[in-house]
Image (tube, chains in turn purple, cyan):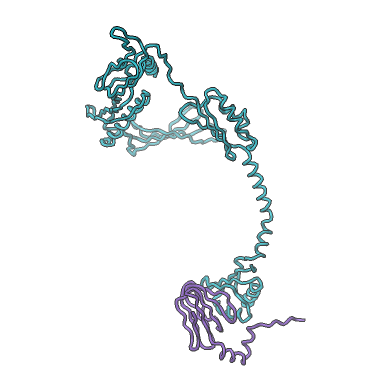
Length: 98
Length: 395
């Protein structure tokens, strides 16, 4: 008997849950100084380079500018950006804590 | 610590690969962009397997760069299973090596010469190269060394594989003289008296007097009464100003060999002592020649080509730097004076002044005279003076 595994990523494929996620989970960035940022509720990685990271979310695009940036603890619901972060721009409705 | 794999994924759409991996719920510990085409990903062993499967699915090139964690450590240890044995062998060999004595350093303490037979005495006491270190009895070695004739003090210390033996030779006994035997103290060198200190006898000179070598400074006679004198051993010291001089000469020009740049080569054929010229080069009156033998017939036929190479040269007169010449001449002459002062072995000798006079003379050379002015005790017994003269003649 084939073992069925529950995968959190598949939840995104259900339209009702996607709508619920859009409404209830706005993107959020938590900054720890200039060297670390925790991004929650993102959807996709659009662009990734040491100088610029662009992430898409349900409410727009999250853009991080800096240098020597890399991704750490990459998970479907959140990821951490490590490096020298100069600026973070969030879409309307997004929140930046720091 | 969990097992961690570092891998590289090559491809232009790295972001799309990451999104696909996230959709598959692959967690990545660290993602770094190496260049436009390459992503470096750290992930757990399980996630790394899923990432490689994903890369193969999308036909992306991938490679494993490194592994960390217990599994990697176990793998590393498995590959190096002979390492503990090697460490153990090295430790045993080091212990064996360091337990033996490999160097014996014999040092002299003081100015006295080293007594003869130090190495033999150490060997008798069991101190030799290759001896078992902890088994060495240093006190026995010291006893053996002290038993040597002319040895005043000995110390033997073991420092690992190194044994240091410090030996002090006996210094010469002080000069003995009979108190009753009359003697005079005479001047060891010419000079001007600076001070006179008489313990017994009668001073015959006073400060400011000029004395000659051999002149009596303190007479070994004492007046007992107005009419009577008696002979005593003269004791005391006479400090005088004395001079050591040295003269020298150095040419103002030197001859230097310079190559003219002209060269010639002559060759001749040589067979068992017979020579037949092949080419004749120009002969120079002054040249440096070098000859080269080239084999023609190999081992079986002793046929050679003898090549003579000549390089012409000429002698050129080069002027010396006068300042440097004076300085070097003065240094050499003053060193000569100092050597003479040390060989005179005067007591309490102290340099007061030193100078060098230069005079230009004909034949383009410079002459110098160095003077070392010294204050020293010059009163010695006549026996000592004769001994000094004897050794001077021998030298």
